[in-house]
Image (cartoon, rainbow, N blue to C red):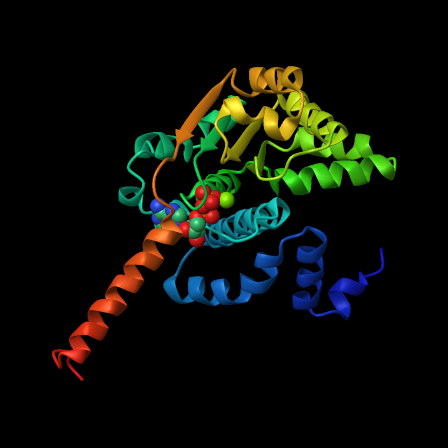
Length: 274
Ligand code: ADP
Ligand code: MG
């Protein structure tokens, strides 16, 4: 006769269960099984349905955890979404295109998006919102500025880990390169950046924002030949977001000032309510 297992004799099943849940990576089971069990007993729910409830909770939790991890890995400087974007304030922006892009099919198709417009019109906001939507849809995302990216590439090159970084930059499903145009690059910097876009061409989706129209990109990339080749790849399958208009920052602070002036005038005239 075999010896009775230690499990059966000395250790409480609750302890064993939690151990098994941990080993099987089912933290929600471990946290919820007693409570859900008590609920099910009270409601007269059968065993399959009890298990089903636990499985559903585990999956919901797991999806949330993976999404949160994806968002952390994307390294967004802040979280912005389209819910807080005022399309009325930016009439040149094609709202239906933006909403369509938020469905992320362009990412599956490895297409690109370029948002163009002066400072303060919401390019970064839109890029962050599309990046967040991509994370929510299950895509890996990397967010960086053009200057930071070039800096990182140069550093990696000096430290002989350029290949690893290039690989990482190639493999992310959506790479967002914000603010191309503010800082001109050295010849080496421009070439390293070109290589990133070149490797991503038809391999992954890329979103670029720039304050410069295409014909001025040479001023930051230096060489006309390189700019041509880069634009060629980037614009082969591209959705352009034209964002021309007044700076949202400037417009809101102007509005605030106007409100304050009105309020002050009213106070001087004794019209304002206390
Ligand atoms: P850009 O990248 O074009 O310079 P940002 O996206 O940084 O502009 O926008 C500047 C600020 O104004 C941000 O705080 C952004 O959230 C806000 N903003 C810009 N456009 C809008 C808009 N249409 N609706 C709501 N907020 C906006
Ligand atoms: Mg910006």
